[in-house]
Length: 157
Image (cartoon, rainbow, N blue to C red; front, side):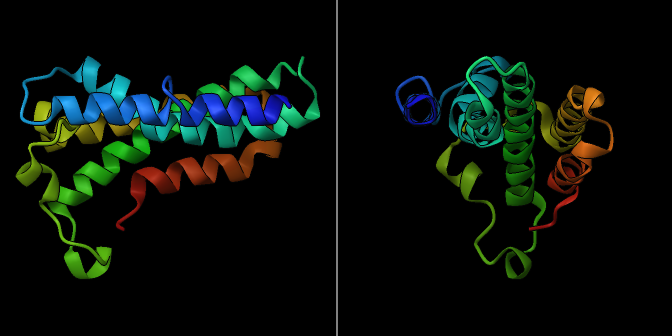
């Protein structure tokens, strides 16, 4: 039941659906990085955080790992979205398999629009570093999660 509850929260009004609403309202509006971070944490971040937390939920509702893995997922999800926004500006359409430049054309609120490409890249790198540092207590057992985090910030498609 707890797994279903957490999934519903991640997908619902305080998660993906709510973030999408903020995203739509922010189109063609001047918003700051805090608003963009909030909407992205609610959208992509909530779903990735749930995915990271799910194993700890199944291990038991009092698992101390839940908050650590949820935080890792939120940081990873936001970094993923920032890199996605960067690829929309700098990526190769053939490599990505989709058109680039759609965010700017649609007036989307993105970190790239607010911070520029260099600032957005630094933010993604900082988030990945923070996500990885959250796993410090897991030693080699979290090597794959660390590798996933590094992949997110280095990906080209």
